[in-house]
Length: 289
Image 1 (cartoon, rainbow, N blue to C red):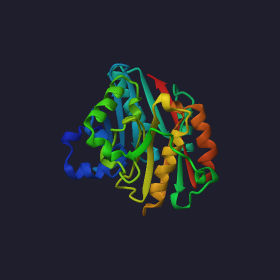
Image 2 (cartoon, rainbow, N blue to C red; image 1 turned 180 degrees about the vertical axis):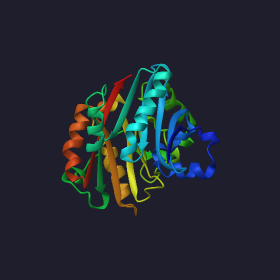
Image 3 (cartoon, rainbow, N blue to C red; image 1 turned 60 degrees about the vertical axis):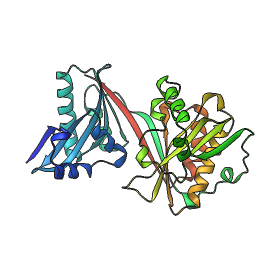
Image 4 (cartoon, rainbow, N blue to C red; image 1 turned 90 degrees about the vertical axis):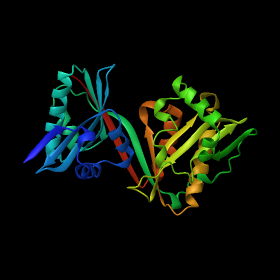
Protein backbone atom coordinates (compact mmCIF):
# COMPACT_ATOMS: atom_id res chain seq x y z
CA UNK A 1 0.00 0.00 0.00
CA UNK A 2 1.37 3.41 -0.95
CA UNK A 3 0.85 6.76 0.70
CA UNK A 4 1.63 10.25 -0.54
CA UNK A 5 1.87 13.03 2.01
CA UNK A 6 3.30 16.45 2.74
CA UNK A 7 6.51 16.14 4.73
CA UNK A 8 7.40 18.33 7.66
CA UNK A 9 11.13 17.58 7.83
CA UNK A 10 11.40 18.65 11.47
CA UNK A 11 8.96 15.92 12.50
CA UNK A 12 10.19 13.07 10.27
CA UNK A 13 11.84 10.25 12.22
CA UNK A 14 15.64 10.34 11.74
CA UNK A 15 15.73 6.82 10.27
CA UNK A 16 12.98 7.67 7.80
CA UNK A 17 14.66 10.97 6.92
CA UNK A 18 17.91 9.13 6.24
CA UNK A 19 16.08 6.93 3.73
CA UNK A 20 14.52 9.96 2.04
CA UNK A 21 17.94 11.58 1.75
CA UNK A 22 19.15 8.62 -0.29
CA UNK A 23 16.64 9.73 -2.95
CA UNK A 24 18.13 13.23 -3.11
CA UNK A 25 21.49 14.12 -4.72
CA UNK A 26 23.73 16.13 -2.40
CA UNK A 27 23.42 19.25 -4.55
CA UNK A 28 19.71 19.44 -3.60
CA UNK A 29 19.85 18.39 0.06
CA UNK A 30 20.22 21.96 1.28
CA UNK A 31 16.59 22.45 0.19
CA UNK A 32 15.52 20.25 3.12
CA UNK A 33 16.66 23.00 5.48
CA UNK A 34 14.94 25.78 3.60
CA UNK A 35 11.26 26.63 3.45
CA UNK A 36 10.47 24.04 0.82
CA UNK A 37 7.23 22.24 0.09
CA UNK A 38 7.95 18.50 0.07
CA UNK A 39 5.82 15.51 -0.90
CA UNK A 40 6.97 12.08 0.24
CA UNK A 41 5.89 8.82 -1.38
CA UNK A 42 5.99 5.70 0.81
CA UNK A 43 5.21 2.10 -0.03
CA UNK A 44 4.49 -0.06 3.01
CA UNK A 45 5.90 2.77 5.15
CA UNK A 46 9.20 2.79 3.25
CA UNK A 47 10.29 6.00 1.47
CA UNK A 48 10.11 5.39 -2.26
CA UNK A 49 9.86 8.82 -3.85
CA UNK A 50 10.18 12.52 -3.12
CA UNK A 51 9.21 15.83 -4.71
CA UNK A 52 10.89 19.02 -3.45
CA UNK A 53 9.47 22.39 -4.45
CA UNK A 54 10.27 25.99 -3.70
CA UNK A 55 7.35 28.36 -3.35
CA UNK A 56 7.51 31.99 -4.40
CA UNK A 57 4.84 33.55 -2.20
CA UNK A 58 5.07 36.90 -3.96
CA UNK A 59 4.65 35.61 -7.52
CA UNK A 60 2.51 32.69 -6.36
CA UNK A 61 4.69 30.29 -8.34
CA UNK A 62 5.85 26.79 -7.45
CA UNK A 63 9.18 25.55 -8.83
CA UNK A 64 9.74 21.79 -8.78
CA UNK A 65 13.43 21.51 -7.90
CA UNK A 66 13.80 17.75 -7.58
CA UNK A 67 11.47 14.85 -8.36
CA UNK A 68 12.62 11.28 -7.84
CA UNK A 69 9.91 8.65 -7.95
CA UNK A 70 8.83 5.57 -9.94
CA UNK A 71 7.39 6.53 -13.32
CA UNK A 72 3.97 5.09 -12.51
CA UNK A 73 3.65 7.42 -9.49
CA UNK A 74 4.69 10.71 -11.11
CA UNK A 75 1.22 11.48 -12.41
CA UNK A 76 -0.41 11.23 -8.96
CA UNK A 77 2.42 13.29 -7.41
CA UNK A 78 1.87 16.12 -9.89
CA UNK A 79 -1.90 15.92 -9.40
CA UNK A 80 -1.56 16.07 -5.61
CA UNK A 81 0.86 18.98 -5.86
CA UNK A 82 -1.50 20.90 -8.14
CA UNK A 83 -4.47 20.33 -5.81
CA UNK A 84 -2.49 21.69 -2.87
CA UNK A 85 -1.36 24.75 -4.84
CA UNK A 86 -4.90 25.56 -5.97
CA UNK A 87 -6.04 25.59 -2.33
CA UNK A 88 -3.25 28.04 -1.55
CA UNK A 89 -4.26 30.18 -4.59
CA UNK A 90 -0.98 29.71 -6.43
CA UNK A 91 -0.93 30.72 -10.07
CA UNK A 92 1.65 28.50 -11.80
CA UNK A 93 4.03 25.54 -11.64
CA UNK A 94 7.48 25.43 -13.22
CA UNK A 95 9.13 22.06 -13.84
CA UNK A 96 12.69 21.48 -15.06
CA UNK A 97 13.80 17.91 -15.72
CA UNK A 98 16.16 15.77 -17.72
CA UNK A 99 14.62 15.17 -21.10
CA UNK A 100 13.05 11.71 -21.27
CA UNK A 101 10.27 10.12 -23.34
CA UNK A 102 8.05 9.16 -20.39
CA UNK A 103 7.75 12.65 -18.92
CA UNK A 104 7.42 14.24 -22.35
CA UNK A 105 4.56 11.90 -23.21
CA UNK A 106 2.89 12.32 -19.80
CA UNK A 107 2.95 16.12 -19.83
CA UNK A 108 1.96 16.29 -23.50
CA UNK A 109 -1.24 14.45 -22.55
CA UNK A 110 -2.01 16.70 -19.60
CA UNK A 111 -4.02 19.83 -20.29
CA UNK A 112 -2.34 23.12 -19.51
CA UNK A 113 1.34 22.23 -19.64
CA UNK A 114 3.38 24.33 -22.04
CA UNK A 115 5.53 22.64 -24.70
CA UNK A 116 8.99 21.78 -23.41
CA UNK A 117 11.77 24.28 -24.12
CA UNK A 118 15.55 23.71 -23.86
CA UNK A 119 16.86 24.73 -20.46
CA UNK A 120 20.36 23.32 -19.96
CA UNK A 121 22.99 20.95 -21.32
CA UNK A 122 25.37 18.91 -19.18
CA UNK A 123 28.62 17.70 -20.69
CA UNK A 124 30.74 14.98 -19.07
CA UNK A 125 34.43 14.51 -19.80
CA UNK A 126 37.38 12.29 -19.12
CA UNK A 127 39.49 15.17 -17.81
CA UNK A 128 42.76 13.26 -17.99
CA UNK A 129 42.28 12.84 -21.75
CA UNK A 130 40.91 16.30 -22.48
CA UNK A 131 43.41 17.87 -24.89
CA UNK A 132 41.62 19.67 -27.77
CA UNK A 133 43.72 22.05 -29.86
CA UNK A 134 42.17 25.21 -28.36
CA UNK A 135 43.01 23.98 -24.88
CA UNK A 136 46.70 23.50 -25.74
CA UNK A 137 47.21 27.03 -27.06
CA UNK A 138 49.29 29.46 -25.02
CA UNK A 139 47.11 32.06 -23.33
CA UNK A 140 48.64 34.98 -21.44
CA UNK A 141 47.01 36.83 -18.57
CA UNK A 142 47.02 40.61 -19.21
CA UNK A 143 49.00 42.87 -16.89
CA UNK A 144 47.39 43.87 -13.58
CA UNK A 145 45.43 40.60 -13.52
CA UNK A 146 46.21 37.57 -11.43
CA UNK A 147 44.56 34.30 -10.49
CA UNK A 148 44.40 33.02 -6.94
CA UNK A 149 42.75 30.00 -5.26
CA UNK A 150 39.18 30.87 -4.31
CA UNK A 151 39.81 29.76 -0.74
CA UNK A 152 42.12 32.78 -0.31
CA UNK A 153 39.19 35.12 -0.84
CA UNK A 154 37.60 34.03 2.44
CA UNK A 155 40.57 35.48 4.27
CA UNK A 156 39.68 38.93 2.89
CA UNK A 157 36.43 39.89 4.58
CA UNK A 158 36.30 43.24 2.80
CA UNK A 159 36.32 41.40 -0.54
CA UNK A 160 33.64 38.95 0.62
CA UNK A 161 31.44 41.87 1.67
CA UNK A 162 32.13 43.61 -1.66
CA UNK A 163 30.85 40.55 -3.59
CA UNK A 164 27.83 40.19 -1.30
CA UNK A 165 26.98 43.85 -1.88
CA UNK A 166 27.00 43.23 -5.65
CA UNK A 167 24.68 40.27 -5.10
CA UNK A 168 22.30 42.38 -3.01
CA UNK A 169 22.25 45.02 -5.74
CA UNK A 170 21.65 42.32 -8.40
CA UNK A 171 24.86 43.32 -10.16
CA UNK A 172 25.70 39.61 -10.02
CA UNK A 173 22.82 37.15 -10.68
CA UNK A 174 21.87 35.32 -7.49
CA UNK A 175 22.15 31.90 -9.15
CA UNK A 176 25.82 32.72 -9.84
CA UNK A 177 26.56 33.57 -6.23
CA UNK A 178 29.94 32.10 -5.27
CA UNK A 179 28.57 31.40 -1.79
CA UNK A 180 26.10 28.70 -2.86
CA UNK A 181 26.85 25.11 -1.77
CA UNK A 182 30.02 26.29 -0.01
CA UNK A 183 30.50 23.05 1.92
CA UNK A 184 31.05 21.15 -1.35
CA UNK A 185 33.45 23.58 -3.03
CA UNK A 186 36.43 21.81 -4.59
CA UNK A 187 39.31 23.92 -3.29
CA UNK A 188 41.76 22.20 -5.62
CA UNK A 189 40.69 24.14 -8.72
CA UNK A 190 38.18 26.81 -7.69
CA UNK A 191 39.79 30.11 -8.66
CA UNK A 192 39.28 33.86 -8.39
CA UNK A 193 40.24 36.40 -11.03
CA UNK A 194 41.79 39.53 -9.51
CA UNK A 195 42.26 42.94 -11.13
CA UNK A 196 44.02 45.63 -9.11
CA UNK A 197 43.29 43.74 -5.86
CA UNK A 198 39.58 43.33 -6.61
CA UNK A 199 37.74 40.13 -7.49
CA UNK A 200 36.33 40.53 -11.00
CA UNK A 201 35.46 36.91 -11.75
CA UNK A 202 35.63 33.32 -10.59
CA UNK A 203 35.32 29.70 -11.54
CA UNK A 204 33.89 27.49 -8.84
CA UNK A 205 33.88 23.72 -8.91
CA UNK A 206 32.25 21.25 -6.57
CA UNK A 207 32.68 17.62 -5.62
CA UNK A 208 29.73 15.92 -3.95
CA UNK A 209 29.99 12.98 -1.55
CA UNK A 210 27.87 10.81 -3.83
CA UNK A 211 30.27 11.48 -6.76
CA UNK A 212 33.71 11.80 -5.23
CA UNK A 213 35.43 10.91 -8.52
CA UNK A 214 33.90 13.86 -10.40
CA UNK A 215 34.59 17.59 -10.40
CA UNK A 216 31.51 19.59 -11.35
CA UNK A 217 32.26 22.93 -13.03
CA UNK A 218 29.38 24.80 -11.48
CA UNK A 219 29.93 28.53 -11.71
CA UNK A 220 32.00 30.51 -14.23
CA UNK A 221 31.50 34.27 -14.09
CA UNK A 222 33.35 37.44 -15.00
CA UNK A 223 32.05 40.95 -14.42
CA UNK A 224 30.42 42.58 -17.48
CA UNK A 225 33.24 45.07 -18.00
CA UNK A 226 35.71 42.15 -18.20
CA UNK A 227 33.88 40.18 -20.89
CA UNK A 228 34.95 39.50 -24.48
CA UNK A 229 38.57 39.57 -23.32
CA UNK A 230 39.27 35.84 -23.20
CA UNK A 231 39.51 35.93 -19.41
CA UNK A 232 36.68 33.41 -18.91
CA UNK A 233 38.45 30.92 -21.20
CA UNK A 234 41.71 31.51 -19.34
CA UNK A 235 39.99 30.75 -16.01
CA UNK A 236 38.42 27.59 -17.42
CA UNK A 237 41.72 26.31 -18.83
CA UNK A 238 43.65 26.99 -15.62
CA UNK A 239 41.01 25.20 -13.58
CA UNK A 240 40.96 22.15 -15.86
CA UNK A 241 44.77 21.93 -15.79
CA UNK A 242 44.71 21.84 -12.00
CA UNK A 243 42.28 18.94 -12.12
CA UNK A 244 44.44 17.13 -14.66
CA UNK A 245 47.27 17.26 -12.13
CA UNK A 246 45.04 15.69 -9.48
CA UNK A 247 43.79 12.16 -8.93
CA UNK A 248 40.16 12.99 -9.92
CA UNK A 249 39.50 11.82 -13.46
CA UNK A 250 35.97 12.87 -14.40
CA UNK A 251 34.50 16.31 -15.09
CA UNK A 252 31.00 17.65 -15.59
CA UNK A 253 30.11 21.05 -17.06
CA UNK A 254 26.60 22.50 -17.19
CA UNK A 255 25.38 25.28 -19.50
CA UNK A 256 22.14 27.12 -18.70
CA UNK A 257 20.62 28.21 -22.01
CA UNK A 258 18.37 30.94 -20.61
CA UNK A 259 21.22 32.86 -18.98
CA UNK A 260 24.14 32.11 -21.27
CA UNK A 261 25.22 34.70 -23.80
CA UNK A 262 25.10 33.73 -27.46
CA UNK A 263 28.88 33.93 -27.76
CA UNK A 264 29.49 31.68 -24.74
CA UNK A 265 26.89 29.16 -25.88
CA UNK A 266 28.62 29.09 -29.28
CA UNK A 267 31.93 28.44 -27.50
CA UNK A 268 30.41 25.55 -25.53
CA UNK A 269 28.79 24.03 -28.61
CA UNK A 270 32.01 24.14 -30.62
CA UNK A 271 34.71 23.68 -27.94
CA UNK A 272 33.09 21.44 -25.31
CA UNK A 273 30.25 19.42 -26.80
CA UNK A 274 32.39 17.61 -29.44
CA UNK A 275 34.72 16.28 -26.73
CA UNK A 276 32.02 15.18 -24.32
CA UNK A 277 31.73 11.47 -23.56
CA UNK A 278 28.15 11.99 -22.40
CA UNK A 279 25.69 14.83 -23.00
CA UNK A 280 22.43 15.26 -21.10
CA UNK A 281 19.73 17.73 -22.11
CA UNK A 282 17.31 19.37 -19.68
CA UNK A 283 14.01 21.00 -20.56
CA UNK A 284 11.52 23.23 -18.78
CA UNK A 285 7.73 23.45 -18.81
CA UNK A 286 5.23 25.57 -16.96
CA UNK A 287 1.54 25.37 -16.23
CA UNK A 288 -0.99 27.99 -15.20
CA UNK A 289 -3.30 26.69 -12.47
